[in-house]
Image (tube, rainbow, N blue to C red; front, side, top):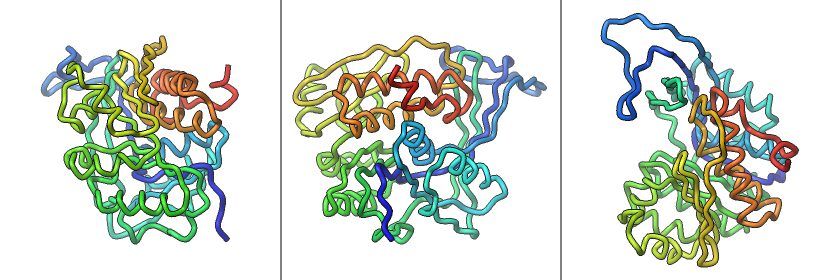
Length: 309
């Protein structure tokens, strides 16, 4: 039996270990500790992370029927991934487990002002075509595609499948895809929503954000909706040859991890609820501001009732 989903998130599901310490030395260039020192941890957290995991939980929190497609490996910490999916009512039957490999995990070092540096141990959990139960995905309204570890061929396959089955596409590419800009540009022209930060947009276009043709080059891609985030400086949404800017919402950052996933998932959710681009940007900014006010990428995700206030 094929299930109906509002949105299926595709990409990574990982284990995240957060460590926050007042002893971290942060000078806007380096996050460090004194050599040969012992330091106090005053806040810590172990939870699930990854673009697909974070976004699928966000969609579910916002009242949508969501599922997640990821590959995970062996390890006792996997329980955090499945427990979060069960807790937040995300369909996890599309998760593939390969016991011959290890699940990716990250250690996130968080400075007192919320700035973070991430240490990532990448295993072999990059998705391949064989990990998809294609026949069971046909009734999803949207695909939300995050990093595929540079697998442009798989991205092309997913986009082609979505087009054949009338599924809308949201794309949040990773750095490895962005290192292949010519191939990626040919595919982003086919999506319904593209989200990047300012640095990633410059990588894709090979163009500085200060160039007078910056926004024109994005509009030339003819993507229905594009968002460009710039951390605490706010974000733009581009649509119909227009661009609309919103400053970042006022908040006291505790941890900036998950800001991008919460932003883009809320934007897609607003589109599904047929909100205007300006309303969608408000949802995105609001959800992101809430997430960075908590430790971890899921604890601050808003519900539909909260985001509508």
